Image: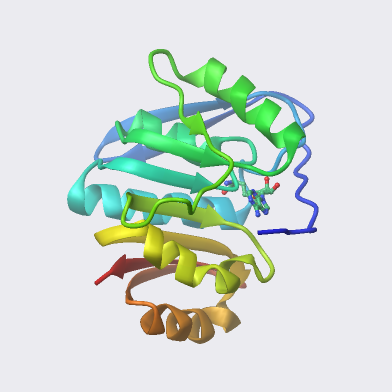
Amino acid sequence: MKNFEIYIEDRFEDRSLEFFIDSKQLKIFLNQGTSFGSSHDTTTLTIEAIKYVYEKIGPVADCLDLGSGSGILSIFLSKLNYLNIYVCENDHHAIEESLLNFRSNLNNYFPKFIKKPFHKNDFYNLIVCNISGGFIPNNINNFSLSLKKDGLLIVSGFNSEKKLQIIDICMKNNLKFVKSFENQPWISIIFQKS
Ligand SMILES: C[S@@+](CC[C@H](N)C(=O)[O-])C[C@H]1O[C@@H](n2cnc3c(N)ncnc32)[C@H](O)[C@@H]1O
């Protein structure tokens, strides 16, 4: 689970983002900060994938945002009425910024921080993970074991050239390819547990 990459995205000012989904407008306010997660392509492509699964099946419960950074993906899921969102982040600074952004965006319900994202098998209906380097390929087995049958995995944070390698590892771990979203050189991919 160790990852020594540094994730920083300078936001010198507060930022307001707008998304459109199902003809609804969804706004996210991000406080000034340095945690990753606002307008980088890996984030935008993950949000495209979330929009796709939301439009296909609507919100589900028991979700994991692994590597929350600014908290943008958890906020997006919360605003789409996904329930029981668990958050995992190994950088204390990013945890503080996620919490600040949760307070600025969410009223009734806060996603819950956990330290061990894979400690329960057969548990999540949705996992979103935008982490670069070897983390995703090295944890495909963990993703698969912790997903329920038909549960969805959205991964991002790597280049399109790794697409076939990731699909191959996923297929060997009962995760079938659903769809990908690309903006060269970046890609996000949706998989479903069979
Ligand atoms: C590329 S950022 C993604 C942030 C946000 N989810 C997004 O999509 O923009 C990756 C985040 O994952 C965190 N991270 C890296 N390795 C991790 C690990 N093993 N467990 C939990 N968080 C991790 C980093 O600290 C960083 O905040």
